[in-house]
Length: 190
Image (cartoon, rainbow, N blue to C red; front, side, top):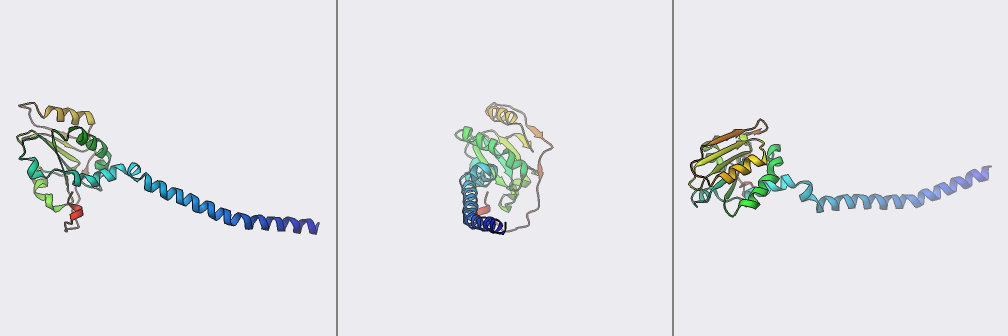
């Protein structure tokens, strides 16, 4: 019995020695797959955050937008704003669909460079979308989370003459936080 017990113990130890390198290899393989997957699918997994960060780069300069005789879609946003992140894919779709006919201006409320626009348009909740006709007249203001159809209808109505101003506020919005970083860097121009 002692010999059988020792024999089983030796077999078990041999199996453990074989499994240890295999376990390490399998563990390294799994970790590698996870890291590679995150890298390859980062835009899909973090699409909203990625879109928000790209808005500043995709923006028409507001000075040009208000003087080139095209309607303007002006959005005030922040990268930390959860509602902004949620709406980013819809806004990006609007831009892709209408950018030939409409200026798209994206102003990050955390950038002091845009302080005069934030005051001028009384921004106290984000996202805030202001739609202007081709003469620079404010047609609609949307504050907070909005239905895609309402925004699309307003975009389509921009070309109509004599449309009265409309303000649409949803209770789901982010209040603007005080910018504790007073520096403006090239990466924060959005």
